[in-house]
Image (cartoon, rainbow, N blue to C red; front, side):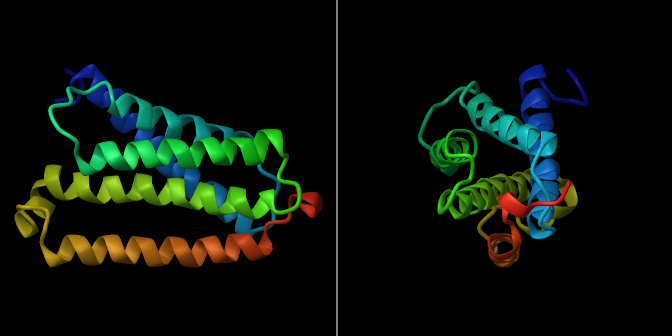
Length: 163
């Protein structure tokens, strides 16, 4: 047990948190018109591994987490193609921005749900996870990432990106 978690849970949570942190930085790099480098690679790798390791847990039924994980992997496959194969050329820049922000939203969405399930103070406010506070928090995350995604889409131009 690591911090009260199984090794698999610890690795899954760690990957998720690193993916979320680096994802935020990558979105701000795009908004700042900066070139994407190592942080972007870490974001993509940890976000993919977060979704993949989610399938290592026992599956007894299809859950929203399983569905989000599958959608996220499809979105990330498109992001990888846009970034590594198409080199963000032409419309692939927009495809990358949209898919990267979508993947970030999926990570944040799961973080919100898990936080309300696992953090005692939040769980006390929303014991079933269906309460308004959970939905409002998810909606705020969605709106924030849409706004950031639009800004990134307008300002990120890899052909003229700075350092």
